[in-house]
Amino acid sequence: MTNDSPRGPQTSTEMATELRRARDRMLARDRVIDEMVENNERQIKNEHARGGAEIELACARREAARAEAGAAANAELDRATAHLEMLQEEHRRLVAEREWLNTSLLEIDNGPSTDEHQRSGHA
Image (cartoon, rainbow, N blue to C red; front, side, top):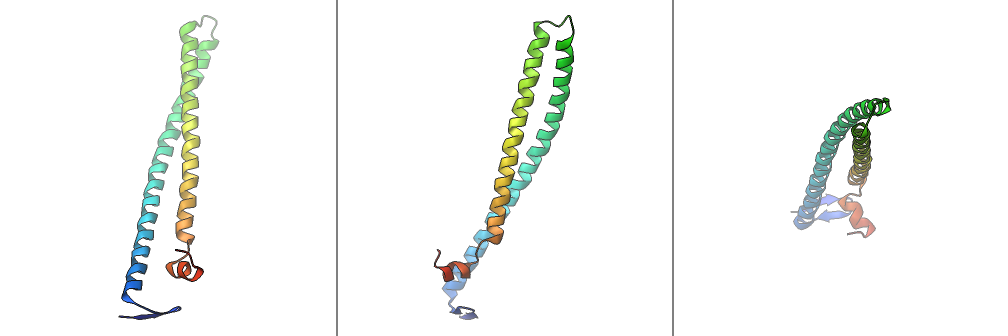
């Protein structure tokens, strides 16, 4: 079975290869989108956790600033500060991961088709 295309007739083997590549590309795109959804969920959870940590830090600062504040208040301030810093670092990592996922999706969506690979000599 042959089919006419801009580069001439295709054999069944070429068509099967092209369909396989299209399927692989679709599956790769689906995986990236699934990862983007998971990243969004983690970012939302992180945002809520950071909001809570900011409240905890404000309370710890208030307690540590009191005249009768002792070592326990200062330790709580240190703990609250470290917790917020950890959440902020996680946020930066999630944002970087999302940027990478966005780039990956664009590469899949804007990548050359099978015909372009073959015409330009790329495998």
